[in-house]
Length: 545
Image (cartoon, rainbow, N blue to C red; front, side, top):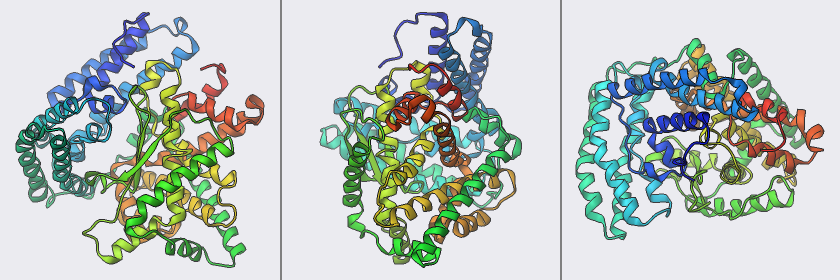
């Protein structure tokens, strides 16, 4: 699908201009959605460029505000709200949280070539040309970063930027290998000659100048955190209400875990210890994940949890080196505008060769068999991959194809974990449910840590203790989770989204869908990925999408 068709109404034209304006700031987002006319474009993150962008966004918001709601259908009024958030969300990052002025990850994280290497969506020559353009733009991007970033920078942001940046040389070498297989190696080599010294210089600057004077201060503060809930999710409820919901979910999950422990005549830590001792060896991680992809797909079909749009193929690979500092496992889904392939890529992070034997064992214990299956449910079936198959196959407006709510996306996948247990996955033992509860405790702790870190003065050490105490995590993964909360407060989205979906199911499954889970889930997934604050109103609307 392209965004270049002629508009049929004035509102259609405004919708297109807003989306095009968003993509001018975030071209890599357009590529991730499958809009390959944006291939190879690097964002201009200089202060003058982003200020021009913000001023133009202000004008578009004024135009949107002036649209008479009475001239729009109910569906298009929803779209108008989505368009508002598509502008207000990046404006929040630019003007309120000052993301580009305090987070070096915004710059090193923009140097990603994965979309051009992972998917065979176009001839190699076209993809290599896009890689070369990205590499050509790296020096300017990092120069803009050095000019904008205002010391002192938050220490966790600098640490993570150094970790991400440290993986970039191997990422560029991966692109070189891809180009050489297509006999286009010199094209990428020329780009690397400029990009790699610029990356090295940027990282040296961070390490030698910014790290020594970095600050532990990273928090958004209560007002900005409340604003974040609205611009990302359309939620106006006080964040303390969100915190209480998270605490209640934590209590429910801990109570159920206690019931299982009593049934098993074991302590809670013993339950996790049993799981942790049963884990794949280093070389077995990916084959085990592949077997779980097939098992969970069969489970979705057998229990009629949702329809599976065909073709549905998801391959399993190691997480790219540059992404391992931030990810245990993830999905690279097919974009809603990508007409070339519906294939998903399920990434699993292997043991880091530089880790000590103790660290490696801790990592493998966190990816024990039961936990890896639960992660596969989250990432593939009936989680993210199934979700994105529906997202790309359903009809919808441009706004709905572009808007991706973190709480809807992650909430569905987290809900899918609980759904699988409800429907009997692994019921022969408690292992599957214990793993699911363990991940639910993690997501509850993420919500509580996000609010505590950004509104309540919680330190990284205290957040680490929260994950260890309430989530039963060992020190290494607990610390990684706590650090993630400093730069990604939106990891509250898993529990927030799950609770909203469970609430909607309780309200609408019986009266509107006669208890038919397939119909309910297909309808839910047909919405696209709207802000979670709209979920009830969408179900209360017309039954046609």
